[in-house]
Length: 60
Image: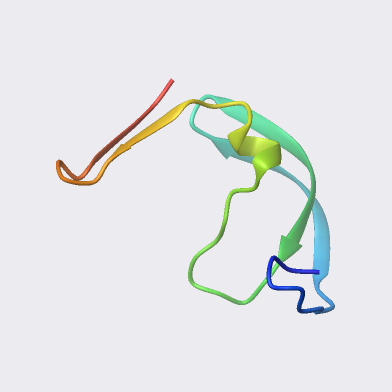
C-alpha cells in the first residue's frame, strides 16, 4: 500500500543497496521507473542536509 492508500502488486528482490558510506541489505521493491525513493529504513541511518538555494547537499 502506498502513501496515498493505493494498492499495487510489485516484484521484490533481496539486495544490498550501497548508498554513501552504508550498505543496506533487505527486500526491495522493483519498479520500471527512471527515479527511485530511499525509504526510512535507509534514511534513518544518515543525517542529510539539503541546501536548495545553493544547490548543495551533504551527508554525515
